[in-house]
Length: 493
Image (cartoon, rainbow, N blue to C red; front, top):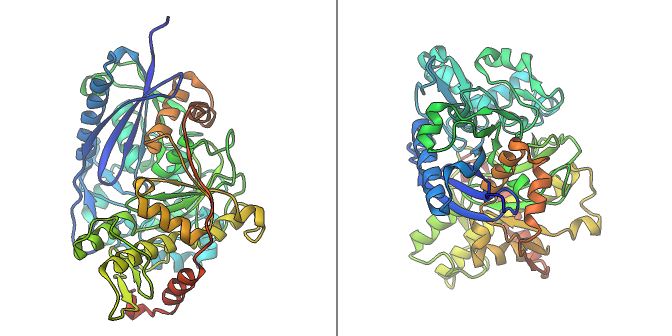
């Protein structure tokens, strides 16, 4: 019997790094190493030291390999999937000049508004990049840096996204992919290249940016001697271009040109996202019209407040996260970190509909409902972006794949089920972002199309399938009415 070979998929998220050791042939998840990150900042600020990400990656890979019990020589490839949109500026030696601005740093909201106006409005941006600038986008953060930290902006010898930074540390080669690049608002999903006019608008030299590989599965090189020593892996290990975390989750689910197209996914994590892989280039100002890691497209809506916001409400109420019941007349919009969808970057939470008989358990349930409603409302727009009619009964009945940490929580699952009225599929394969990265690594090591690889791996997974229940239209309409009628002063926007 030939020796077992494995690949390592890295999920470098906001809060931690996970390194999944995956059997190249069967897709069996053999081990997962973990290491935490540190996020700093008050008010709208959210920053992390990129060197912490690198140390966490090294620790997570070492931990995962040790847990697997396999020799380092069995590893044939590695790929990184990283949190999207973060701004990393480096000096000439490749060291960070300052902490990275993270995706959920909302200080750049004024810059996002200014950029939107300067190009001629939301439609102009959608036509060029597929996405309208909001505070989350890297272009807004670069403009903020130039205005608020001009010395470091001027000193920058390289501008990277979080996954770009880590991939370059692995291979010694600057590279990104279309998926993560499409979240910058300086990459055109129409021309599949950086947009010179937008770079001029931003005052950003293209020479500071990494080349864009054709897909996230392209082998951009091998581990350098320094990286191999730091990780305890063979020097010749293949390094894939990698991608953003949402794009990697899509690959891990088998979504893309060689797999499922136009099937919606809801991810419940620090942020809430709804997305689908599609052959149609999205052009909706209500969505982010991203590229996918495999050459297709990934229309996506993202909210800033999801599981962490609801957990905070549970803590304030002194309840366990599953001590919740439907909210009754109460409506709680848990916009604790500002909000991206809808675009209310300086918003705060809003509670209304209290009665004498309102219980703490109902308030917690209302927080779940508010968070779930905000992202679920984008489903119709997502279907339209894929070229489908959301009113078509077949389209409306397509199962919703539920992933992320919240997908393991009973209350999250039942809230989404009740508010969506759709059948749910909870995939049996865990660590989908890391598994998607592992499929990219396997492809870079010679394994074929990454979506086809992940689809083959997933054949053995036991998915949980939950039938549709009657939609709670009363709760849906009540929450929607509050959100639509709440004025900017009430929400702090």
